[in-house]
Image 1 (cartoon, rainbow, N blue to C red):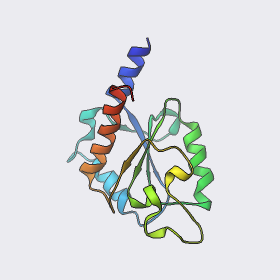
Image 2 (cartoon, rainbow, N blue to C red):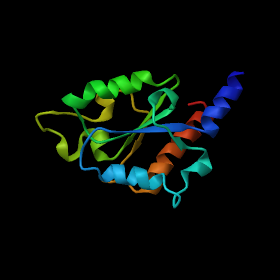
Image 3 (tube, rainbow, N blue to C red):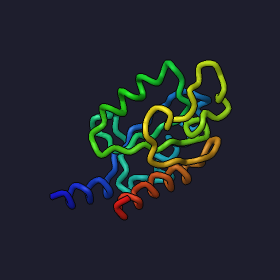
Image 4 (spheres, helix red, strand yellow):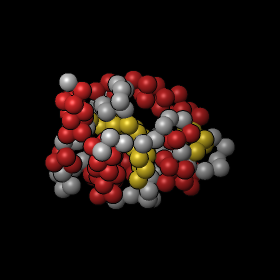
Length: 142
């Protein structure tokens, strides 16, 4: 039974997108990756509206004091096993907002991050490649 569950997680990952703030450049690119032009559904990737149905949390923007508790709550609501993909320079390290009075830094300062997609903003095909690399890592058992 566990092999069937593992196969279904890899064959059809359900993602939820979380915007922690920033300039919204990465958000536009994430939404572009979900459009028919890039067709992420060929990998079985579906966007869900609730964390209770999602396997992968795709995060953009820097973490600040105001958003920290919300991010942790959304992460805690996701079922196990859960994975986090940090998209963009702000989500990885705080980006241009690093060092600001209210910015804590990247996503990995608050929740564990499984995959990183660098760029400012990263292209939609890079975001798809990041999620696909996560799926390949799961296939290998990593």
